[in-house]
Length: 165
Image (tube, rainbow, N blue to C red; front, side, top):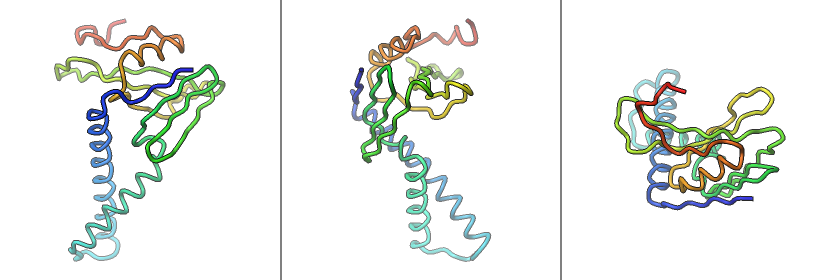
């Protein structure tokens, strides 16, 4: 069994809060315009705006409660377990689900290193169930976990290699 905890807390917190702000903002905008076009076109009060933000936050946390503020991963031959600061614990048995590492790099932006994440994929249908970010966690741990599940353990690539095998 391998347990992975946060290594770079400021980077992790910045990524989590950034994701939360974007998601809640977009959901708030949807609720704002949905209410305006279906109920009251002339509403323009601070309470209304706060209510749409709070509603967006609640909906986001209900839908993505196993994804936001992930602070610990546990990997073993039997399962993959995700733990969050909100107290949510999600377990994926490896008999049904697979660990698939993913490296991300913007093609038109010269990034120093690839961003790391992994997919939890359904073993039968090969459909990705969930993508978990590795931001704030150790690249060396990512390499070890990838190797544990039979991958090469790569943590970076050159942009000139993009699209080549």
